[in-house]
Length: 159
Image (cartoon, rainbow, N blue to C red; front, top):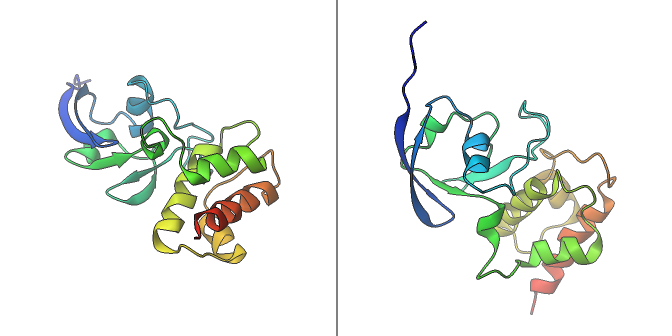
């Protein structure tokens, strides 16, 4: 069996340039968590639940499925990157205020997906929200409080 050497990986995470020594087939999820970005959660480890969702070059990906070698020179945004100077964004605040979170495993992925939706559509309907969050599974809330949280965040953004 041939020994696999670590690679030098250069990427940007939450706006900061990063350099890692890592095994090329290590999962993006694991590399993030091993580097103190523990907001991204592992739910299923199979790309089915969306808990590990992050943005890579602006696109939502399941970090449990992505080998870190594919992140060379990419821009990654995690749940930690959504805060602004230690202040939660509107969606994060709405999840707290309207009970969109319970155990917290799905929450980072739900919030990432909701933020991506609001980038494209500032005034989504309930159906738009359901469609945008369809790749994220929750075992605790029954979704109604999650959808209500996203709707509330949209309404609070309006002048």
